[in-house]
Length: 165
Figure 1 (cartoon, rainbow, N blue to C red):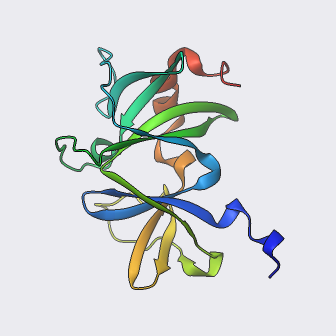
Figure 2 (cartoon, rainbow, N blue to C red):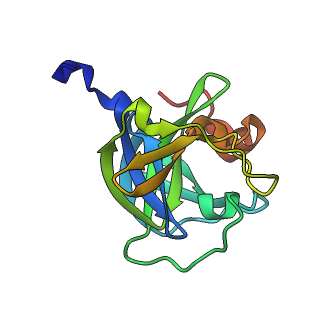
């Protein structure tokens, strides 16, 4: 394999939620921020924590712990906001996701990612791209555009839909 063949399509940003390791494709990540105070927005979905000001733009912030049915925890010095670009019906929307901690960017070859196992009704695996294996650890690779339904993203993004460049 030539060096040119190894691009960001095989690169993933890893982060933790409830001591489990997750990953998202680097090409969807815009930046990683230290946790900052989030302005609450009334009457929003449970996992919608509010908005932040990112260089003059309003960015909605979601809590994956809440979305995945995990207990909420206090923020720590390691808590981060991963600013990502996701797709709503073909339109790009920027949103922040709270992670317990951000780890590193790793390379995962497609043959190192197995399909998500069917593990019963408790876990919805439609948003899991697969389970990555690296050394002796498993990494849950998220299909970030499938984590939220189109209706959820439309509600979270509000007027941002179509306004993102």
